[in-house]
Image (cartoon, rainbow, N blue to C red; front, top):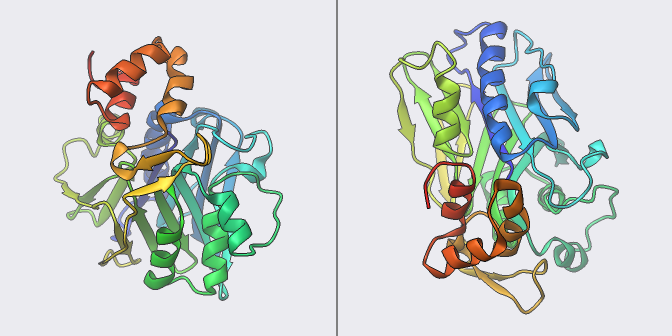
Length: 303
């Protein structure tokens, strides 16, 4: 229940200040999905930079350099690994075959422990489930559509990953979790967030609200790569129909179409939103997906 957000200014028509204002609007609206930590990744001066703090977005100052044309953001709701230890917060830094990259994740991975054992991944002080995706890419020793595919087909759970490399190519790897991507062709600009509601709310607070835009579809099981010139390349990976959930118990099978998070996680969060675990269970039995129950939590639907 974290939030991914960011922009690609491939037209290079916006000033650093304009990009900063857009990102600020996106980040603040993203707080509905997480306030435990906020992080950013971008390339500037020929290097990949990551800046993150265990604070809500509105408390994290962001200076956007004039040459930072692609910026990847993350607002975190902690599920594993204390946010007070900043190494657990997103984005994470990686190096695959000499290519430096940053990775952020929205979702819950349930087989990270098993993957570390089976793949003999190196020990790490980072405690989050998400970091196993970085380790899998590093083991592939390359950052390519094929290595992203291999990683996505190994992890079990719910996810959307964003991966930014040092050449300013941003990749979206969509599993079951939501993602919304807007394209402003007249400006040479892409904006994205985990939900369309967040994008719309953010745009309403900027000068972009009335500009022509189109929605770019990113389907489940799709890898979308956007290069620094705004060109899109797509590929596919096999999305598991079910997977063992070690968080709920090794014998628990979840079907990927159930949505954002494990049902038990939604139950544990329900009191924070004025609901009860029994209400969550009733909605689920009545046919609501976990995505739809989460939307009810955030006031995007009604009981």
